[in-house]
Length: 222
Image 1 (tube, rainbow, N blue to C red):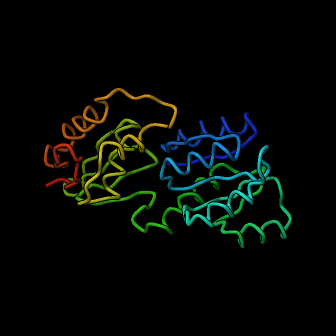
Image 2: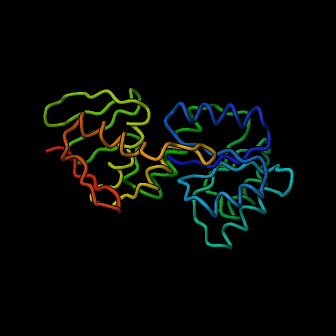
């Protein structure tokens, strides 16, 4: 998943970014509302994690602003405020979920996955399509016809996961880069082609169809 984390506490934000990255997610971290609003306009995120106590604008007002602009990206409020009145205000403003600090990381992860599934039923934690099933806990893939497991690197897993969630659809190189790297990272120009080559070596050339100058289409294994 591509996540936007809006958290002004540097220690918490960076630690949470690191932990979510370890789960295989791409996480962009913003520490104020201005930069968060800019990122939302530049990138399509799967989920936004939003703190309410931002230094330049109340997180609730920022959420209202996004909803007024018809941005319907799922938003999970992550805050130290646990009053029921605050929760009601957030849900009325368009929040999709609400968690209080301190929190358990595992609960946050499953809540994020649930939000994505609600928006896109195909985006389950262990997606399968085209004869391949993903094992997210062990970062590997199962070829269902032969019951053979294939080990994957974190990047390979992330890329294959995106293809499996979009079977038969044309996926551009930029969309793939968005799944692999955070906003402030600068990947080499041929990194996508390199990972495409690795997936074909592991699953066969037929797994991905190349559309020249357009992107790739996931076809699965034969």
